[in-house]
Length: 240
Image (tube, rainbow, N blue to C red):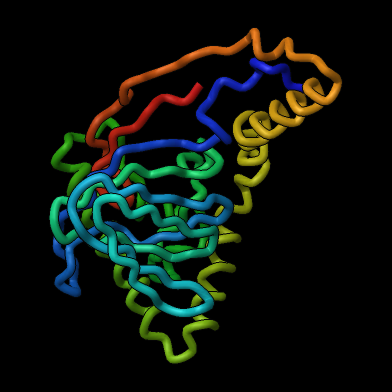
C-alpha cells in the first residue's frame, strides 16, 4: 500500500498551469485557441482576469459558456472545446490526471486525413522545443488554423452526432499505442493519490494517526513561462 507520505503531488493528482489565451484571429474572425478534446481527463477553468468564452461540442450539441473573473467551469472527456479571447483572458487551468495531457491525452480537431496514424498527426502538430520562438509561434498558429478547419466541419456536419462519433473513434485509434504508458502515469499520479487516501482512512478506522506526523508543506513557482500550448501561452509547474 502507499504510505501516508507516498504521494507528494498536488491534491487528487491534478495538474495546474496559468494560461493566457491566444489573441490570434482565426478564420471566423474570433480570437483564441486550438479546438481539441481530451480522452481521459476532465478539465477545469478558474478565470482570473479578462473576458471570453469556451465553445464546446458534445453529443448533446454546441454550447457557448461565457468566461469572466471568478467563473469556474469544467467539462469531461469527449468534450471538444475552443477558448475564445475577448479581453486579456487569463485562466488557472486544472487538469485531471496530471501528466496524461502532456503524454498525448488531447487530440486536435484536425481534418480526418491528419488523424490516420500517429506519425501523420505528429507532423502536423509537433512544436520543436529547440526551434526559435518565432518559428514555434508560426507552427502553433498554423496547427490552430488547421484544427479550426476540422472543428468547423464538425459543427456544420449535416449529421453532427455521426461526425462527432467518427472523430471520437479516430482519436481513440490514434492514441491506442500509448494507453499502457498512460496507465503507468496514472498509477504514479492520481492512482497513487487515491490509494494514499484509502490507506489513511484505514489507519484512522484502526485508531492509527501516525500518518499525521508525516505532514508536509510544499510551494513552487512556475518551472517554465510562456510555453506555446493548445489554448494559449502557458506558465507550467514541475511535477514530482
